[in-house]
Amino acid sequence: MKKFIKTLCIVIVALIIVASAAAILFTSVAIEAINTEINATPVPATIYQLNEEAHLPSQKVIIGTPAPAVINAYMHVPEGIEVIEIPLTIYNSDDNETYVAASSFKLYKNNVLCEDYIYGENWFMGQTVGSGRVFQGYLYYQVPVSTGDSVLELEYTYDYHGSKVIFKIN
View 1: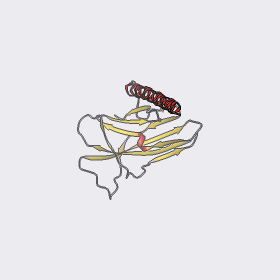
View 2: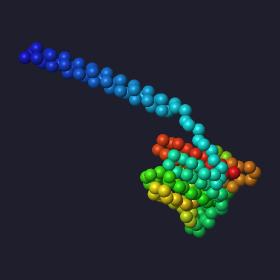
View 3: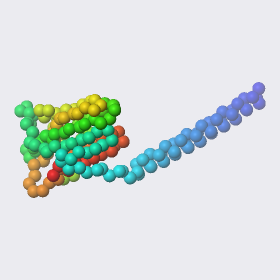
View 4: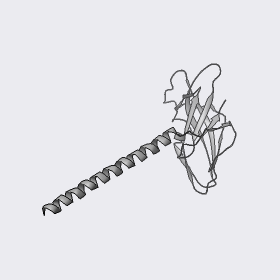
């Protein structure tokens, strides 16, 4: 009986050692994969101009000319901020429906992120667009008023891999 217990203890210790080694190996492989992903060189975003068609893998996107937006009478806009609306047209060229979210768009003025304005007259949170169908809507942003030259860029992340396009607005 003593010999059996001794053998059983040796087997259990050996299993613990093998399991620990496997866990360490798995952890090091996972960390290496994460570091590779973090250090991967991002693919540069393609840049488009206003009213230029961005042909993406499953959709065609057109950004129109921004205009001052009608302000919701019940919502205060801080001094020095203007609200603009940007027309958006998306053609779904995929065989499946696609979801377009307002949160996939970010507006930058002189490389500073502008805040969304969710109280616009035609604001959308997200929309499912059927295969071969078209979505038209508006994006609304609070933009600092400035004199002189300024650069507006609308960034659109169009898939789950983080692929982006940038629309130069001026």
